[in-house]
Length: 104
Image (cartoon, rainbow, N blue to C red):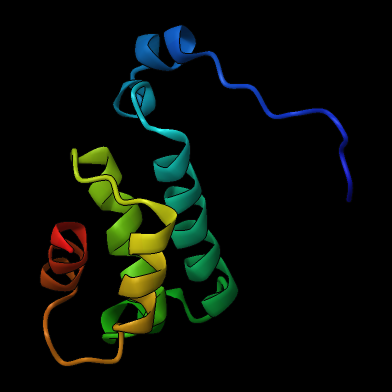
């Protein structure tokens, strides 16, 4: 599915939305980071295994918790998201992994 039109988001519209105001000031790299994390969650889960996928430390859970972090004021860039996903198999807590990557 190719669309030659550039994607343009209205920051004012985002800032007015009850569920989107947190995204109004994201940088382009942070938006790519969010999409990366959501994509990681999406390709690792289905409606049949969502709960088991996010209960175990791994890529799906990292994707979910990373995406939720955006809503709570902890955005990451695409590069940071990729690093967090690659580190997902470590035994340290996911939030700690994302915070560590954010500080790199």
